[in-house]
Length: 45
Image (cartoon, rainbow, N blue to C red; front, side, top):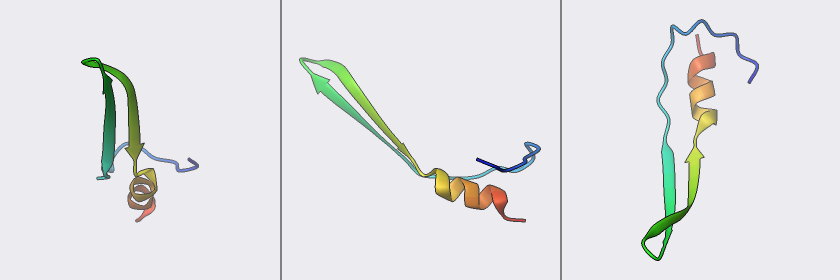
C-alpha cells in the first residue's frame, strides 16, 4: 500500500469473521479487517 517497511514495527487492528452455516457445514466465510488502522500505525514515526 505504498509504505516502505523493514519489518521492525508491529501493529494492532480489529477483525471480524462471519461464518455462514447450512445443514451443519460452513458454506461461506466473510472476513473484515481494519487495514486503515494498521497502515496509520505503520506509517507513524
